[in-house]
View 1 (spheres, one colour):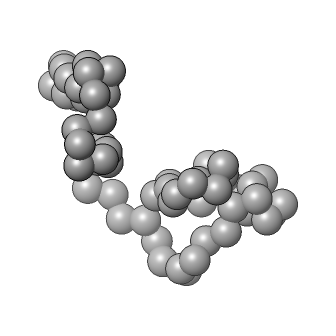
View 2 (view 1 turned 60 degrees about the vertical axis):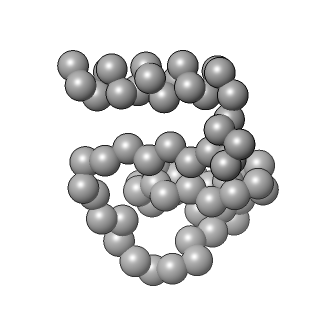
Length: 64
């Protein structure tokens, strides 16, 4: 998001300096609800082998 190519769902306390500097903005004044989940967003084309390996690693780590 800071590079200008998307959005990020992140607790505001983690980006307080960026919010203060205006590097990032919060479009909504809503709390981030947490449901102990991970989300991986990637192109419909699948993202390639490197992304698949990363996804598999995240799944293994979350399971342990």
